[in-house]
Length: 295
Ligand code: UTP
Image (cartoon, rainbow, N blue to C red; front, side, top):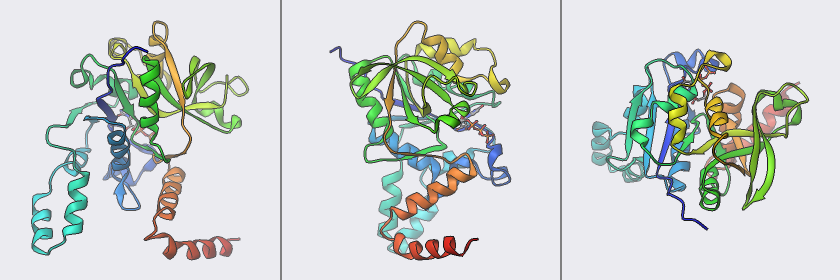
């Protein structure tokens, strides 16, 4: 088996407007909304770190400065914690901070679409395969989604997308893949269809927001025309890349929460809170009572 080039860098496109979460996103980027006690973006960065990512590339935009501040030392706060002997809190903060020089921030001045946001990272990524993680999709599983993809990539090379089952009735809302020959824990992708018309989807496996891509995608995105929603779409770029390169799928076994939507965000809060031994006992009973009280 050929030795694959290591996936060292991950791109987090965080420049979207987050209109589905207005009015909150008028003042707070959706990536900074908290699931239990951590901002959504922290879950995704943790997933990348677990997969061996060494450099975190954030494509930010107007009003997203707080994300950059979040991944920095808060000197006054830490000084105060030190003076008050809050050592557990200090350790927690230190553990979440990317090492100096391992986080880069670039700016997408106009939110022209996900494909354009990824293209904005081209100089920082350079000529090597890289990961893209949509920061509003957070996942819960024993083995992180990106870790599973990196393991599959070690066998397949090329491009790898994570996919997950959806209700076939809902397939028209997603990017759906066609299923080819099995390879390792995954399979070869035969086709990709963005939001297929009802009843025409090649499977019920949707692309869930995690990608490993070869750097040739940048050249394609540079001239990619606007597609659905009048935005420069990553899917259109991948379709063009698929003409010359292989794409494999990693079927992710776990839960995915779309925290860019209100229902997904609320479910994520409930799911992650119920996984916490320090929180579950306090909320389980009241949650059941609340549900029972609803007509
Ligand atoms: P979404 O379509 O979910 O994000 O894009 P959005 O545009 O922020 O959300 P709504 O639909 O208005 O509520 C998927 C991801 O791509 C990023 C978003 O930040 C999100 O993480 N994105 C999207 C960009 O970085 N730039 C863009 O131009 C568009």
